[in-house]
Length: 78
Image (cartoon, rainbow, N blue to C red; front, side):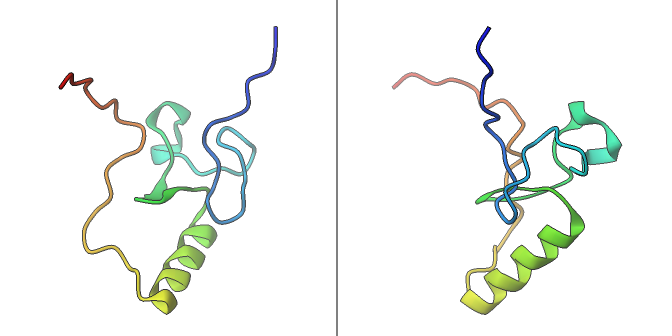
């Protein structure tokens, strides 16, 4: 069986989802990442704060909450 690369990584430090040290919502892997933005997931409070500071300096802070990247989006046909 071939190893599948992890689709989710911290957008600040690159730590893969499921790695030791990754913070999960309520400490449960099944709940998804504890921190995220519309640009991707963040592994820890440290990376979340670094991302916020970087976005503040760029002037690109979010104006509202980002959608949960782990919620399944319904498939729609057009």
